[in-house]
Image (tube, rainbow, N blue to C red; front, side):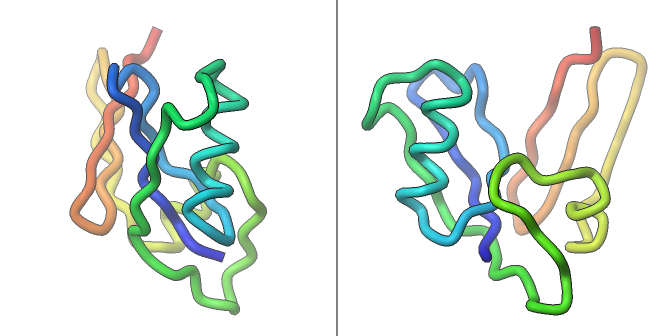
Length: 92
């Protein structure tokens, strides 16, 4: 398995996805976020070591931490940084 950074043109839902290929990561993101086929593109961030259990789909916080992601949380947002990429989620 691999960890991908998946983006769309509007960047509203850019996030990490665990998948076996960039095509599968893009398709998962499109399906789950309501985008049309071909709207998402995926960039490989890293290969997940076999000793780490990783299911396809959105990575859990535990998986991201096992992959040495850094979490920064403040009152309004959560930022996750891994492999030179970072993303933020607005906390509602």
